[in-house]
Amino acid sequence: MDSQDRLFRFRLPFHLPSSTIVRSGGVYISGALFAIAFWFLIDAAIYSKTVNASVVHVTFIDWIPGICSALGMLIVTSIDKSRLFDDALGGGASSTTYQARVILFLGFSLLAGGLAGSFVVLIMKFISKGYNEYPTLGMGVANVITNVSIMLSCISLWVSQSVEDEYSYSLAL
Amino acid sequence: MSTISPLSKIIGLSSVLAVGFLFIVLAGAIFGNWIVLFVGLIFAVGYLPVVATQGFSSNGFYDDLMNESSNQVQDLGRFVSSFLTVSGLALPIVLLHCHYLTYTAMVMTEVGGALIYATVVVFTSFFDQSDDVNLGI
Image 1 (cartoon, helix red, strand yellow):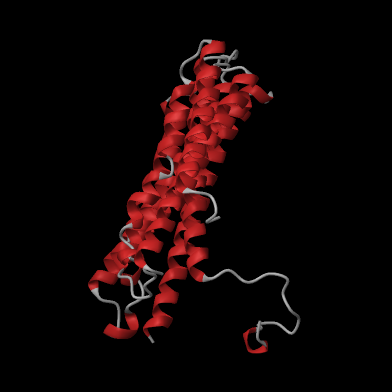
Image 2 (cartoon, rainbow over the protein chains, first blue to last red):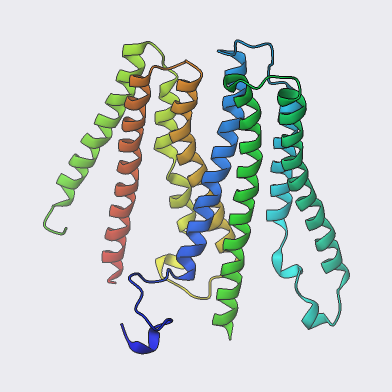
């Protein structure tokens, strides 16, 4: 390894991964987190139907935060990110940029609303009614884990795609 | 690597695949619950989205000027593949948690599914290598 390639004064014991590896790894992590979220939701529902001994059951209320988060993730990831930052070229925000920002705001609101809604379900349906023991409380906690995982999945996908944008930009120059 | 003939590679991979399916079918047959066959199916198709979308990366050469849409397609393939793989890992645990499976059946299903998945991955990389050799790279 040449001395010109070094980033720090000391020699790193590993190579920093290239941006293509970061990109594909971020997408893999995003898919894995989304699968974890999905299966926590399904697990809570099946558990409630089969081995649940308490009177609390998973109903459609528990699904609403997860559906909101998934819709928000769909909206956020389907926005074309080059539409958000084209101020410098056009000299001011064009109408497409404005629309993209409004839609993106809706997507992030759905994500945050899903996360907040899962906490609301956990507190209003489980904790405030006195169901604090773990096998019952686990259904509410699984709901929170679902929404946190969907949000982390969306963040991972966003970051990995932004990495690729900078990479192709530097290549184009 | 090149000392192993392709025929023995294929035979070895197919026997590993057979052992993987054996584990899963045994887990279904001994404990009388055939829902674990879905796990084998998920693991078998888990790597295929990546393979199916690899063809969009400009003829197998590494090209710095890939256009935007091919990257999006590859990302979709990676996302779906990762989703399916983690689903295959998570489904036996969910079934164990909901008392559909015993612990032994869960472990056998996971091991069999991992063997099937590894077979598909190794088989695909084996074909990629032979493609590269044909192109003279």
